[in-house]
Image (tube, rainbow, N blue to C red; front, side, top):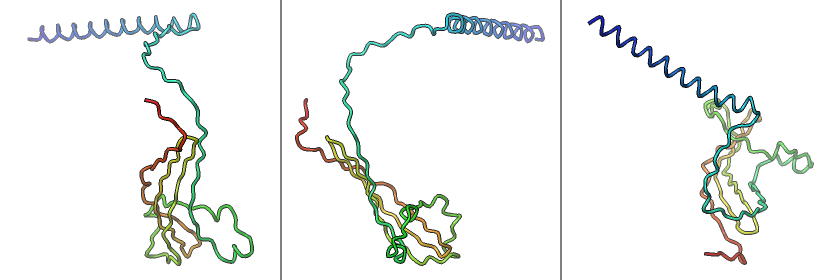
Length: 159
């Protein structure tokens, strides 16, 4: 029995040495092609049966929403760009809504529109905006709706 175990071990060790030698030979041949000549070996290009002609479209993207700002700032003309941001709640557990008083909350609708000369796409999402007494505000968003697309007139669809 001991002789059979040693024999199988020697066969396994021989196969490992053979595999390592073949893989190093293949690797050395490939690396020699790249590093000695400075060029990679040519890669065959697949036969392309269908190749569409491509055109570019200019896309105009717009986000529309309402945001609450303090009335004094609005009357004095002191509204700043950071007053227009809706900061999304990232970690809901870091805000304990039961220990911090919320003095204002309301529903917010955000609309995203993408315009091109061929199509107009729109999607919306609902959220709740919270103003907390520690002078921070957050919005908690629902998922986006599916895109609705309207094709522009004058575009002829070819079959």
